[in-house]
Image (cartoon, rainbow, N blue to C red; front, side, top):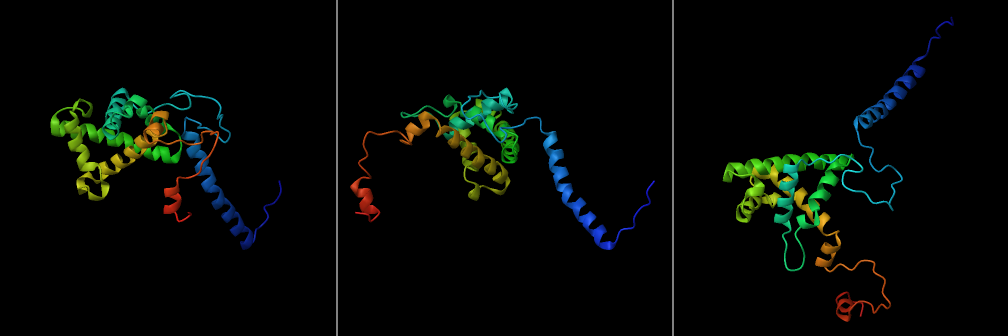
Amino acid sequence: MSELRPINRREAIKWVLAASAALPLLDRHAIAAQRTAMGYGYDPKLMDSFKPGDLWPLTFTPEQRKAAAALCDLIIPADSKSPSASQLNVQDFIDEWISAPYPKQERDRTVVVEGLAWLDAESKKRFKHSFVDLTDAQKGQIADDICYEPKAAAHFKKAAGFFNRFRDLTTSGFYTTPEGMKDIQYVGNIPQTSFEGPPPEVLKYLKLA
């Protein structure tokens, strides 16, 4: 058995620093091991198509999905130009988003799930019914209190934060569908046989003509 070699102060400090630097790596590996879903990884198969739930377990219960669909339609109802958000399954997009095993989506999951629970509780408190069973006018009354976070009452601030994030997710899901892009007349990268350039009034406004 070899004798223990005494170490000097400089070597001891180096060992302590090396051990300290390794701790965050161990913590990250421990957190990663707790996740049941692997995510897309570093080389996603962009040419493959996936159905909701193929990549990771979804979050919404049937009741939460109905409430999310009702809130989506309150934010973007059907009109003469396009269907409602729920008709384009935006609630499925939101469920897929908040179920992804990434930090931003995990934060949104908490916001959305807790927000939908608050929405149902507030609906029952005011009107004795779940949010999905309210009239449009009743839904609108609740939304009026939480639709603009800077002016929301103090006891509605958290709910207003939820509504703000849910509205962002709803519009993101809606306006990235073909119907949503048509609604805002977004053309995108569509091949054209000729290109006439910007209209003269646009060039004039930009002081380029």
